Structure formats: C-alpha cells, structure tokens
Length: 453
Image 1 (cartoon, rainbow, N blue to C red):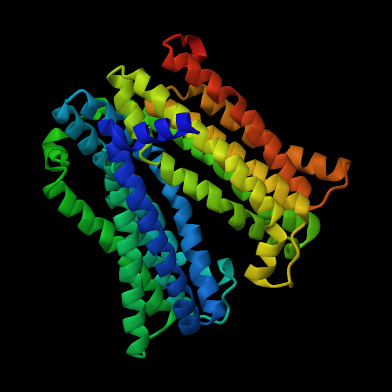
Image 2 (cartoon, one colour):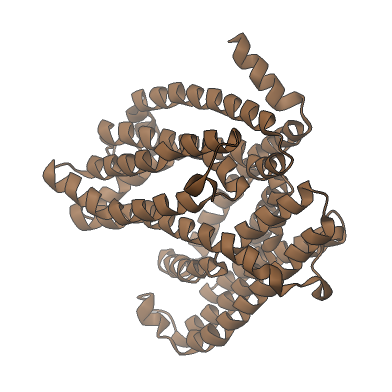
C-alpha cells in the first residue's frame, strides 16, 4: 500500500507533466459531470417540446450527418501528434505550420463536402430516409440543409480540440463541451417559453449552439493562449500535408475499425434475438461504461504528455506513470468485481424490475471494460509516439473477425446476448495482447521492424 501511495503521490504532485495532468483530470471530472447533468436536463425539455416522433427524427438526422465526422480522415489526430512533437522541441513556427496546413486541408475537405452534399440535402427524400411521413417534406429538407451547413462549420472549428489536446489541456475541450450544452439548454428553454417550439426551430437552435461555441472558442484561444500557433495563410505548407495525412489516415482506419467492432452489437442482437434484447445489453454497457469513462478521464492528458516525453527521451517518466496507471487498473479489477456482484440490485434500483439483465452479461461486460482499460494503459503511449502501423493491422483484423466470431459463438454454443459480449471480450483480448509488448520495446529503445513503425 505504501508503494502505491508513493507512486500516486509522484503522479499527482511532483513532475511538471504530472501536475498539469492532475489539474486537467480534476477539471475533467467536474466538467464532464456538469455536461452529463445539462444533457440529462436537455433531453426531457426537448422531447416534451418536439414529441417523441420529431425527437427521434432529429436524433436520426444528426446521426446520419454525424457520420461525416470521419471525413477528416484522421487529420485531427495527425495534427495532435505533430503539434505535440514540434512543441516539445520548442519549434513553435513548425507547430504553426502544422496547424495552418491542417486547417487548409480540412477546409478543402469541407468545400468538397459542401459541393456534393448541399445539393443532395435539397433533393434527397428525407421523409422516406427518416420514415417521417408526418413531417412536411419542405421543412425537413430545409432543416437537413441547415444542420449540414452548420455541421461543416463546426467540423472545421473543432480542430481547436486537437490543439488543446496536444497542449495536454483536455480540460479546455471539457469547457467547450459544457458551454455548448449550457447554450443549447438556454436556447431551447427560450424557444419553448416563447411558444415557438417546432422540429425546425429546435433542431436549428441545437445545431447553432453546438457550432457557435467551438467557433468562439477557436477565435478566443488563437488570439490568446495559442496566438503563436494561430493558423495563417502565409504559414500553410502543402509539403507538410503528407506527414499529417500519413499518420492521420492510419488513425482514421483504426477509428473506423473500432467503430465497426463497437457499434454492430445492437444490430446483431436485434437480428438474432429481437429488438427487446437490445435493452438489457445497453443497460449493462451503460452501467459498466462508468469504468471506461472514468479511466478515460485519467488517461486523457497522457497521450500528448507521452508525445512530449518521447521526443525529449524522458522514458523514465513514461515508465513511472505507466506503473502508476497499472496500479490504478488493478484497483479497477476490484471495483468491477463489486459492480458485478451487486449488478442486479443496481439494475432494479435504476430501471425497476421491468428489464432483467443476466448475470453472465454483467460478468462479461465487466471483463470487457477491464480489457479496454488495459489497452488504454499502453495504447496512449504508442499513439503518442506515432508508431501505430501494428495497431492498424490488429484493428483491421479484429474488425474483420468480430461479426463472424460473434455469430459462431452464439450459434455453436447456443448462447443468448451473453454470447455477443463474450465475443467482444475475445476480440478485445486479441487486440490487447500486443500492446504491452510494443510498449516495452519502445520504452527500452529496442523496437525494430513493424514494432517501430
């Protein structure tokens, strides 16, 4: 216990990077908590004002358009790594070049998206796509256009999040998220009080709120904290585009593979067992997701801190922090065990007795979130170094085997939804085996071949 306290004390109080991480971690816990609270307040207000049908239409529309987020082909993560590396070397002119070039590249992407999608927004049969026969087609078409245009603006403005993350200041992104939620709540409340609530007015208001906040944050931060690296046309260097795109494309493929692995479960369950079985799966996922969220907040400042440490060859610091995070992870094992034991009581208190979650589902979900956290322990450092070629291969392979493995386990062993979660555990275990090996090679400067690419 004394050894653990010594490690935790070092993590939180002594080194410059760890002091900075501590402040951001504490701030993130507060900010994320407030963001969740405002989101919970916004849902019933919006739902009551729109009715369930229109609210469902709004959610579906924004989800469809939200998929275009991946059109940045990983530029945000590419900028995060390159900016952190340049900053660690004190090359702020180079950091500004990376920022300016990333904005230029993303502006081109946004321009192409607008040329293609603005006409599409106007001609697509949205009433059929969203199964919204009760809504006027002209209103829905106009709303789709407004949401898409504002999405494009937000898409470009949100590069500030990558800069803040590279500066080891994820709390800034927490402030932006909370501000957007509060502004959304204020706008919706004002519209409802004024008696102007409709699908279009509320949908447009929500889009405006989540767009204006990152735009305002970008203008403010690039005039103050990040003035030295503010994007300028004169600083754009397209010869640096290849560096940003190369690592960005790898991150993009890894993200897409993860999306395939972690978002197909609902569809598989609905197809194999019926839509009703999706509910207990999601209850377990939300319950144990608290572990993923909490550990993610602890790990959030470390990616770019690891980038800085790796560039400065401060690998001793990396090892100390990783050992501390490992001890925290071991503590999570105990927490998850307790959560599994008392899971049925928690579900009954939370949603009553209307939905039953099999204990096996809770057990496997607990194992799954522990495997996710285990991977995060080491992947943050690997991501920070940019040596992600092996991670890319593993992620794509896992995405390919995920659905066939799930179907095989369910059908061969005649399992229910617990078979789906078990398959997720197996895939995540495969995805987690290599990470401590590559971490060890990188942190001891013995990585060669695929381990060093």
